[in-house]
Length: 382
Image (cartoon, rainbow, N blue to C red):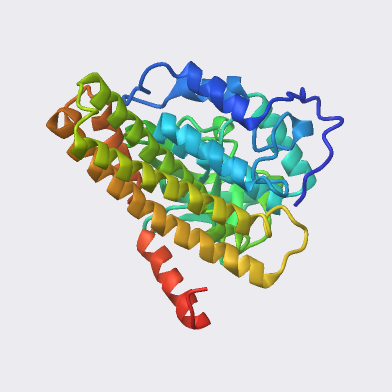
């Protein structure tokens, strides 16, 4: 990783743990995040609490989440906690963490230092990779690189100021990453088609660039780095952590409702709550196992190839297990509360819609198929 010393960065060191930052963030969000636009106040709370800087190393004012050896579990715990507050905000925060990890892993020291400075003043990062028939082309302009094309399902479109987009070139094999200074570029953003069942506050949409010039030092890494393993598949366990936070919130809402309505002594209800608690705890165990495997690889200058393969395998299994856990918890919650929980403004209604939508991405079937191929190639389950 290209993480320079921050002694001359001017960033104020904030000696707080990730858990303390999560607590401050959660205390700030006292009401449901609005669905009618980008969650500006919640993102401001991420910044104010220090969570936006939490993925940075300590001397940059962060906690080193996911960047330093042994920090994958606190990263996943933090993502799970943010998802428990709100899944759309968790989705945006996971993309921010992902982008900073990519800059740290594949960027230069100067690029990482600038990313840290941008984060410290409140810029939020993201990764925009999805595209339709046409993506973004990297062209040679008279004065430097030029981007032309579009991306789809860009979370936080029109509001995220430091997204990483993947671009392609006829001269290069593999996608290249480019950091867009979106607040400084003539970038067309359109979220009008984003009318989903849930996750509305993630404000996903389309961006279009028409021969937009970028700086050469905004190109991150080499062609093919974005999809390089084990980071590409192994890092996907991040959004599984956010999703599990959504399942935990369903359990919270179920307990609150049953207590408020005096139904917490019903034997059928107590059995359902017990089943939900077991499922949630199983998800946490999967995250711990995935974090242990990732810590043998991520953040280390050298790692064993077999350990890298195992980290990807554990990430795929964890994603698959947590998807099933979330679906089962959701079913128990809806059965416990009944129709009342599916009527607005009951908080369960929003959380069910958000989790249902979030679980459909990205490519859960491909992750399960990868698990099967790995086990078949190895010849046993362990």
